[in-house]
Length: 217
Figure 1 (cartoon, rainbow, N blue to C red):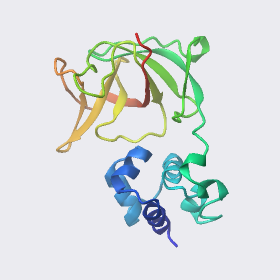
Figure 2: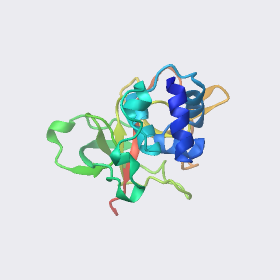
Figure 3: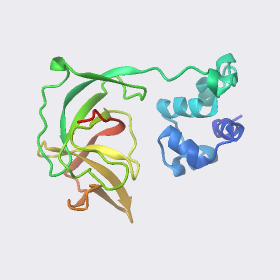
Figure 4: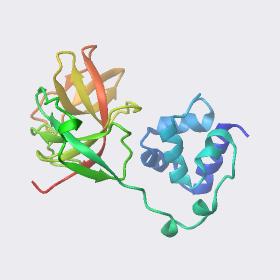
């Protein structure tokens, strides 16, 4: 059985639609379509593990076809499955949500504030405090000043509609929504009072926001 056939079997057995699988794996629906068709030549480890969690199938079997399809743990009902394991990540700095700004760079060594998350941001994951109001919106989601965002700095994909940390070549950074539309890329604020930025070669994405913590500030 080819990998795409194993993926198709797992998704079908889960009873979930492609859109739901995409949300749970934090990828686009087109990515799931490629998994199912065999067009995707490789699957990142985090996608394999996310798909395993979403379908109840073993990651090793999905990736390589070895081992049991499911083990005793994944055969039990959802109420009896262990919860995701939380991990603490340091608050290392702040990020501008508005006009780009230079965030402090004295990172982890001096971190004295840590927050837990059940999302996997990798070995070098970190939290940033949001400053500025460009990501404040009348509708959800909204990232108010004082909110903390968890950043995955490596191994992430660019997905239209998701939120990222972008760095300008002059060293300044900003927090915006990434939008791909009609062949062009943009950094988009949620607050309409702020300007959308067309992405050129002078921007680099240095992290994807995968979790949010509101502290009540």
